[in-house]
Image (tube, rainbow, N blue to C red):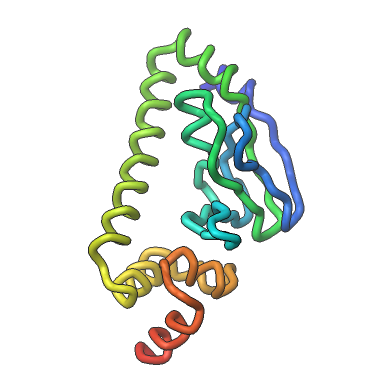
Length: 170
């Protein structure tokens, strides 16, 4: 862990900053120390939000991290953020030297895969109201930190539909 900590750099960015940009091979991964971010992709002239990150979460382009390919997502800071930044190449070098660290990295990637799988299954098989109810039970603070338009996009519905669901549940 000391070797890992020696490679980590603390950085801060203001609300609205685009931390990761689509169609670019990203060189770094981040851990959120303080703040909130969203991942989105541009589709048919709209921004489709598909992930929110907050304190303790890992922020990365899995495509750049795993295969060194250009990312498909943008990561926007929804609040001023304090982050821990780690260069992917330096991290890979550490993996090669330390089996324990390599296992940590594998577990980190596995956790992200499980989150992605849960999200995909939820979008395919749950109703809009079930998705909203699950979101507020798992991440209740999100409603206080993220504008409703982004939450509606994340849930795969219009803002009008989200407002209707919220009114029904009151």
